[in-house]
Image 1 (cartoon, rainbow, N blue to C red):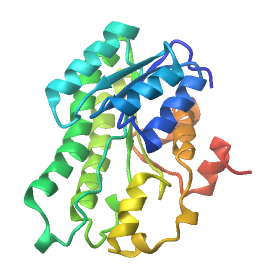
Image 2 (cartoon, rainbow, N blue to C red; image 1 turned 180 degrees about the horizontal axis):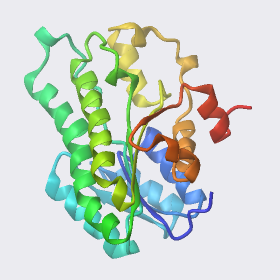
Image 3 (cartoon, rainbow, N blue to C red; image 1 turned 90 degrees about the horizontal axis):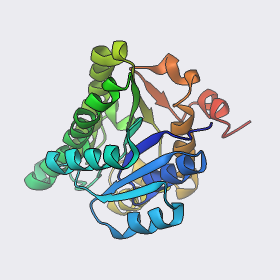
Length: 250
């Protein structure tokens, strides 16, 4: 898919799905805006991609940070055509009774409020230009409770509903809101999950996790009309039909 002239803003772009998505979209010709809390890894990634990449230090749980990052993206490239809300945390994994109050709240600040702040910031620009795509990274945890993951399951369930709200309010203004549930991906998050030893996900053999470029390639596919059937809904990358459509399997 040719994304020349399009600009994608990716939160949590320093590693894992975020970094893989930046590379996939850049290879397709897009301008990429890389957001993360620390500058080192996104600066290196921007250097790898070249002049079509912009690295911005941003804490997605701070609405002022997010507004400033979106404004800088628009100032640099003229537009934000695609928002990919990828930033998220799995910490602190713990049963509810022993959970850390501040850590639990911090997860909601990043996983839920961070998505809302990003959408709130890009909507005026997208609507003024006649539309845009807003993709959130979902999870099977939105639909199935898991021990030790009360914060994560709750946050992903909230984002699942928020995606539907965005679609309900703004599809008529050209906004394409879709959630992607990638399944288990070979990222640093899975290392933390494995180390926790809590719930069945931690018992999975690492060989079952898909590579980070699979959801990245699916996100690029989601920019095309074939994904319009999923507006306001969730795409599961565990579905072999989706994997075939994206070209991940034959």
